[in-house]
Image 1 (cartoon, rainbow, N blue to C red):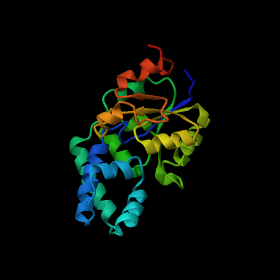
Image 2: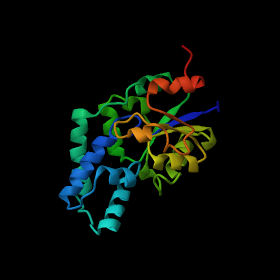
Image 3: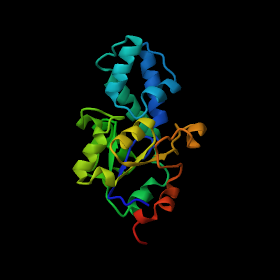
Image 4: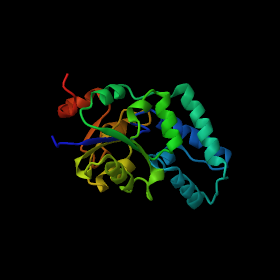
Length: 224
């Protein structure tokens, strides 16, 4: 087992089971703006990407410039849904509490959204001062910028980082940064085809349950 000095977690679809909710809300909000997309389209173009990517893709493919208040309306509706239904991934809090090395978050979500999301599921305190977002770098995932930024801020060589991701864009970003990456496939947005690992190309390990985490990496667990 390779030795690591830092674990970098994606947020949506890894720490919190939010991707399906986010996709459904985005589809509904785009519908109100006259743009008709389905779940497969959202998964293919937006999963693991930042909000500016949504704007650019919609403008490029549909010729629609979304109104200035679109993002705020989408975020407001989504956070209201999160307040009702958002849950942390089962077992992830226990993994965080038992990790023997430092960890952080690197996410395409906005600072306000990730902060609110983690607070809703009682994970925010575990990441105090260690939340990094695409708003802090020039290029979001699949570019490696965000992972390089997180490693630099945490004072760790990129080659000594382990990334936990759910999306192919996140996997590509981690690989481009020279980091080991494992794919988490336990989110409600992951299909059975994806869960079998057949499209986790590049990930060193795929797992669907955080109870498996230390079975694969016992050296990362604090002594009991």
